[in-house]
Length: 241
Image (cartoon, rainbow, N blue to C red; front, side, top):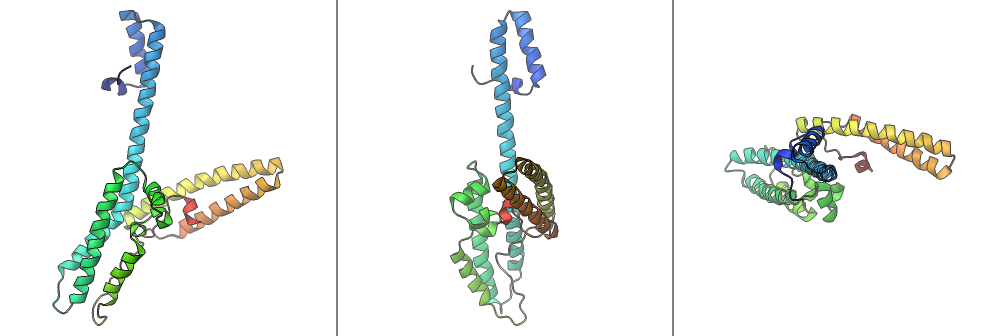
């Protein structure tokens, strides 16, 4: 069958079934042919729904990675507006830092259009911490060069800027922390169920593995609870280990 008509994709499964049954009664469509077409339409509908869900997830993950970077760029841009003739080193450091931020933003936006999650791209590129924070995407050599520019700023009477801080905006951090907390609590419930099953089986290796997993998740929950909203957290509890 050709690509399903768009209006079919807007119908619920029950509405699709009713529409197909109507074609049988009105147009004399063979019931078996109706069932085959209905199955194709329902399959296509699931695929469209799945694709949309994945697109939404990808957009959210890349947005959460980029937002702290955009916020840092905004802060540096504001600092650059205040120019003092006796602060050439400060201006040079901020401009160098801004160049890194702008370049990275462009690269991440390009990666976000390729259909992979940040973690998948980070793994392929061997980025540290699963690419959890934008600073993980900056090569160490670049960080060193930028830090040297900031170290060259005279300390007397000049506020020092710390580049590449692993921080995120508090509103975003609050959302991410609460989501991670709920997700990890659910995984703890599943792990404890697995732990009970392991003890019922009496297998020592299974019991030890189950105990270890529960201990890890409980430790991760403690760290999540204590974390500040501005702290960059991993997307899953596994990231803590």
